[in-house]
Length: 313
Image (cartoon, rainbow, N blue to C red; front, side, top):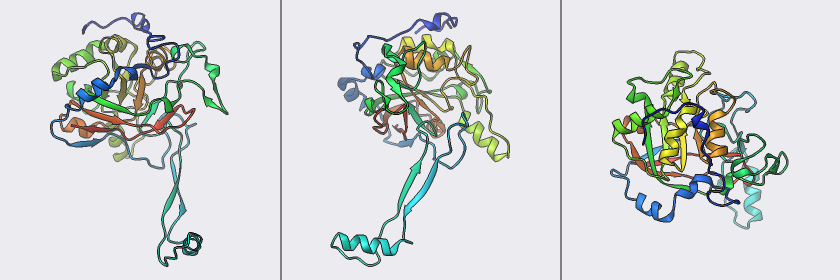
């Protein structure tokens, strides 16, 4: 894997359109074959389980104000005793004093820890694999590249802990992570990345947000993340998916133009992004490779889904 950082212009070359056929809607997830998945089962060494999803709280989105806050409301509870008694009577099984608590959850699919579908971003009139952007409608959702096409992601995961490698708790806002740095981190960790692995990148942004809140300060709006010059690294290692502990995987503000890294990874290469991960516990345990499991909700026509990824170290 080259340690040379390509200029931004060179980073615009890669495309997986047609690689798995003209009708493909799964992109680089096709790299996780049954044979690879079976071999990856041998990755864990301790059996320790890490939850990589953040808690869902009723708070504004850290990226776009148009994304309304997550809300949990109660559908029914112990205060509805008469209702539960009537329900029991209808079912023919009276049980005084027995009932249930139930919720209603309301949230944009891109709040909190979530996965982007390949229909999430379009560029120059097209989604991944050349499907027209008009294949997505407000009423019908995605006719192509919907999140329900993902199913589940099960296989080997790799953590590239950029913040620890640079000796900081978190990277500075707007820090651009490039190919040369990713290769340096990989080599220093002694971590091998195989085609079809899930690559997770730690910037420390989650810790920066937590610290700001603890100090009563506004969390940073600008965020470190992948820059355009990181594409050469991913073209070489061919990940099945890429995730990070910031809001967009790419740096904010976006480099050169709006959603530039999203366009390169999702639209051109067909790589699903996993955003807003909690990688702090994984990093603290010095767990650099692990068995990774993530299953988005099967939202037909959906642009993304909340997830709670699991790493088994």
